[in-house]
Image 1 (cartoon, rainbow, N blue to C red):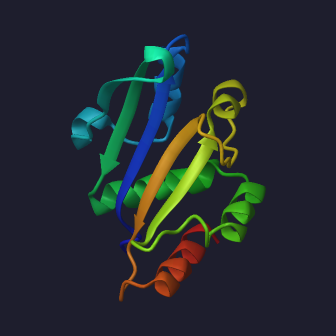
Image 2 (image 1 turned 90 degrees about the vertical axis):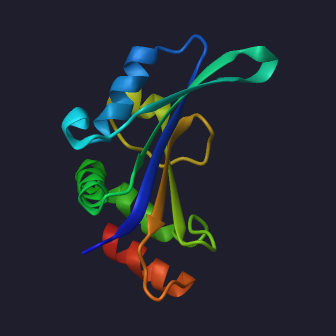
Length: 149
């Protein structure tokens, strides 16, 4: 069953951070053979505060088998307490377009290999475009409940 129309994974690698370690953590979200599945990792260069270099790593999944496998893998990695937090905070994380937003603390994942929900900007960003029909906030919330229960 289709759970998401698309999933976008993104992380910002700031100047002075360990690019290799962050990219490895980024790839840990993607349970695929990237080349075989033709999944691209986009690397975008940008400038931050005081003209400091930032590299943005981004991958967008649009095929149903990829989005379902991504969510399955994410659920396996989440501890039950984090799943409960996601469900408790689901309403403010869902926008009017049925996009559901999750942020996981970058340092917690790099240092302890744990997914910890956060509201800070130093994180791995996940945007899940929820498949809900008919498209409404209520149906999208039910779909989120179904995914993370």
